[in-house]
Image (cartoon, rainbow, N blue to C red):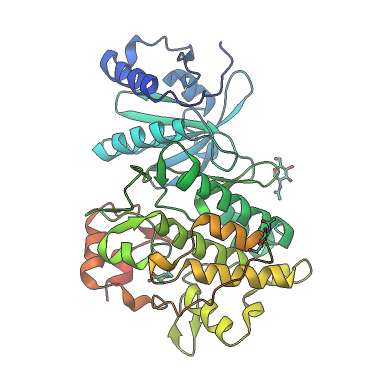
Length: 378
Ligand SMILES: *[C@@H]1O[C@H](CO)[C@@H](O)[C@H](O)[C@H]1NC(C)=O
Ligand SMILES: *[C@@H]1O[C@H](CO)[C@@H](O)[C@H](O)[C@H]1NC(C)=O
Ligand SMILES: CC(=O)N[C@H]1CO[C@H](CO)[C@@H](O)[C@@H]1O
């Protein structure tokens, strides 16, 4: 059995070519027990090897449920641990997301992005194989009072920085400009040293160099991380990711999810809550109680302000990721005053926008097991 090799950089044409060959010749042509390696180090795994690695997709090997299907832990015959994402069958969308993710992730190489080892095609099945991340995802630690203790301030700040670096790479330094479109705590995986790796590129879109924003009739993403211009009008740009990053940062600071707030009998989301605290000069109250002993107050307050700038209403006024990084890491960089975000309460999304969302892929736009139709169905 070949030892698995890591994918080489940038050979987009080849990979597209090998994927199409695979669709043409069909899976039967592939030696069932061998792991084939393409000329460019992206492995094509046989279905048999994936079945063996995951014990036939055993329930106990299930790591979680991604937007497009379940993810399993697996162990290859070589002993190497892998994460296996099995895209939902029988939907044309599964194939689309598969190709999208495969091609995108093949092009992207950065220490803060999850690493793809290869793929497998078997009948209707589309499977992606990643490097296994032993420490699950960020949401697992962040929103659990016991596990949250394990993330002290130093760790959280380095996670924030890592995510910011990964996004900066996507937006600016990768060969193609990429908007992730579904950044959230469960899409940030943690390696053995708790370094963050952005995952799940199934909804990402590539922009041409001069294109500033895109428009889509099909609104995808996760409620709570969607910027207003996108949720309402389907307009997205790199600044949509900046918005999601802002929400994520506020979650990392507070250890709370966007939707878990009630204040004076009003439903207030995390953004609204953070804004009100900051405006009253009480930004430190946003702090997760797990951070009390380890927190650097100045850094924390800087993060609150940067988070609020990222969730600003006007996409054009949100900082770019490179500005975010310099604001976070350089204390001499002056911080502008955040303005009041209008998207503070649940009621804001218009009914028409809500129905657009509901009309498409309900499993993607779900939050805490509730689909948007539940949330708006009153
Ligand atoms: C927070 O969650 C609510 C649902 O509770 C949602 O309507 C809102 O868009 C989210 N807020 C932000 C800032 O994303
Ligand atoms: C920090 O920011 C100040 C003010 O913008 C700038 O003069 C300085 O060069 C920056 N330092 C670093 C290390 O980037
Ligand atoms: C905080 C935490 O759970 N860290 C773990 C991350 O994974 C490595 C390797 O499995 C463990 O040794 C750490 O304890």
